Image (cartoon, rainbow over all chains, first blue to last red; front, side, top):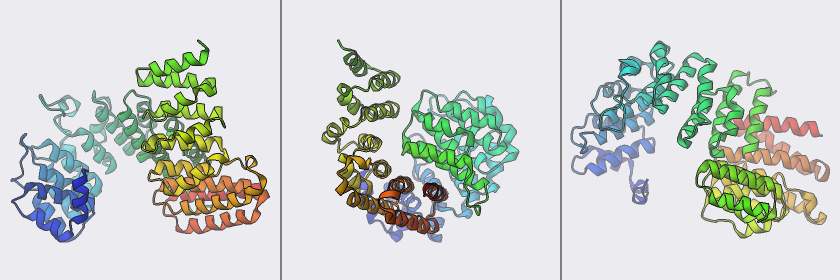
Length: 273
Length: 212
């Protein structure tokens, strides 16, 4: 966030933000208001209604033909947790703008509503063979990473056989998103081990994202590998906390004793502080 | 050229992240005070792997590092400050006590507050004049209890670890402070929203009860 935005963020009020989003003259103000409503978790019905309108906006167009306001509105709706956005966001998945589809898939993952599973699954049509780069663009034909992560988080077991082949996709991010989702859907160790392998890769970004994935899915065998990863301790601590929470969840919380596994994870955490 | 100079030169000439890590590991291994300035410089490179190795090397050298590091703390690079705080924590020299006390509750970077909170628990009290120990321990206790209210979970977690370690050293010197820690732990178990931290508190209570 730029400095002037920070100042503006302090100044905007709920009423102003909604008014800014409704008006059609200043596109910058509209774009910013959509972001603001999500950022500050404004769940007022009027905010939701206005964001849903913005999801169908035709006015704000980027030079590449994209729809910046729709993207921002979709992201905000994901953060606000209102289920009335599930169907409109599912329709966004058919929209020509790649980044609107990506924002919608990410938002649907956050909304945790299984109704969107068929629409998400449909975007995997054609499988890995169809999942190629769009000529002249920095992305594939679909936002596969976001789609597959959403399906994994939503527990879409019916999509398992569609997602599995993506664990061999040539784009690393897609490959690891598929490994993460497959682990969530099947709890098979081989997918957790794929993520562990990513921890020793050459690309720091990928190592970081594998840390977050392992923490999020709580793959308990990853503890030592997480601690040994060449990455910031703060990220490793978050990942290990994810493991610890998983282990605590597996055990009866009423019992005052702590499992050996939990103690092992805590010792690793202590060493990273 | 002496061996350590050659190792320092290798660090300075490293032109990739991997090579930097490798050369810093070698230099750290040497554990020579001549390496201090180079290792401290590495803390500011934004290369987590190399920084971990440099921290290990500096801790290995120990006490002679403290005055140099206090002099050369980079106030503007919070990554470097967090690594330096880990060095102070690892060495446990009371010369860094004031710095850790302040950093644990006032530094704007959560990584620094986290490292300081842990470090406060591992001060080597025998290095302090005996008549100063009781007051210093009370100050550490006060600061760590304050840190258990930090807005960031990781700092609260580190404060628990710090309190457990402090409790360990208090059992013989000031048992009444130990019971203060235990009371605070019981309060926190009831109020702490993070399950991971509650688990760490329970573990700390178990450990301290074993000591008694």
